[in-house]
Every structure is written in structure tokens, then in C-alpha cells.
Amino acid sequence: MKISVINPNTTETMTKQIGITAQRSASPDTELLIRQSTHGPSAIEGPYDGAMCLPGLLQSLQNAENEGAMAHIIACFDDTGLDAARSLSRKPVIGVGEAALHFTSLLAQEFCIVTTLARSVPTLKMNVLRYGFERRCPQILASNIPVLELHAPETNARAKIADIIRMAINNGAEAAILGCAGMADFAPSLREELGIPVIDGVDAAVRMAEMLASSQLSPSKIRGWAYPQRA
Image 1 (cartoon, rainbow, N blue to C red):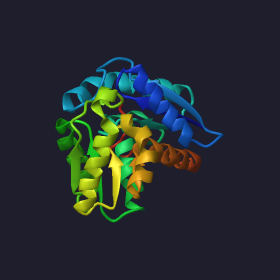
Image 2 (tube, one colour):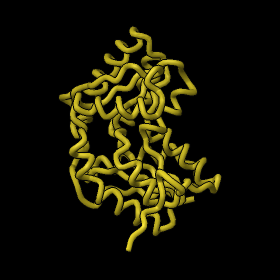
Image 3 (cartoon, one colour):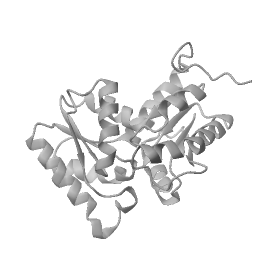
């Protein structure tokens, strides 16, 4: 089983970290095709970055499909280009944001998202509304740490994220979702420290992609995700 994991930005260190996280979650018989956008922004932190990454993201997805990928994962919590990718591909395409919300909904009644910058919050609010989780995920909180600085020692990112989750717990959250693929490696220690489910979208997406790939089901192409007709 081949599954592609595509980082929509062009930062190789982040792509490598996403690949490590995805490999930990994958079954032994799954081959992961770790890819990144062929061109575009170095980080996705809002609608402009999301739009600029689309051509490179879609090209990477098509390349992976040509190599035999049976499912694809878009490893950006904004679910950047998800509808376009689902229109392009004849295989299942999973966004890590949508995967995390569905996964967490089976583990807690109310949960929160902790993301990077405040300008990402409106996009995530719209996604949560679109996916039907607005009542169960009322708290979408920004750490105000840029994507590419999450592992810089001076930002103390993990500790700040833990403090934000504690505030969310006090306001009713029973679980937390890490709203950036770059936060993935914080999840295990945060679960242990906070005593609640802390969900990483890359992990959730890999498990869902394996399930869909093994089901041999193809996405519906009759309306919203119809395959684009070209001259």
C-alpha cells in the first residue's frame, strides 16, 4: 500500500519531521511517499500562503498518484487545497485538520484546537463550521508562534501550548487538537502531562488514509469533486 504525505510548503526540515511522524503511525506494510510542494511559500500562515502553494501542491499530488499512491494526505492543518486535490485525484485525499476533528470526536464530547498565529484562526473556524463540529469545538486558540519557530528553543513553544490547553480545559475542553503539522512531536508528552487526549492530525490522517486505501473505495466524482475536464 502506497500513501503519499504532502507538505504544502517548501521547507525541507518540516517535510522531514512530518515524514518521521507519519512513519511512526503507519502500518509495517505501508509505503509512505513523503513529498512537499514543488514551489510556493516556505510556511502556510493564512489564506494568501494557502493560495500561493496550490499549483505546487497539486503537482506533487499528481506525481505521487502517477507513482502508484492509493491515498493522499495533505499535511497542513488548514486543509489547504483539499477540494482542489479531491477534484484532481481519483484516490481518497485526507486533510489532517478534518481527520483530527473526526478522530477527536470519538474520544471527547468537547475539544479545542491550538494553532500557530492568530491569522490562521478564521480559516480554522470556517473549516470547523463546514465539517459540522462548531458546537463540539468552540475554542480555537492561537499560540502566536510562527510555524517555522515551533522548535526554536527561545520560543518555548511546547510549554506555551501546554498552558493554552490548560486554559481550554478550564473552559470545558476534554481533549485538544494540535493545529499545525509542525506540532506533531509535542503530542505524546502533552498527553502524559495533561492527562487528556491530545491529537496530532498527521497521525489521525495516516490511520484514516490506510483504512480508505484498503477499502478500495474511490471518491465520488458525480458533482462536487468531479474530475476536471480538459481540452
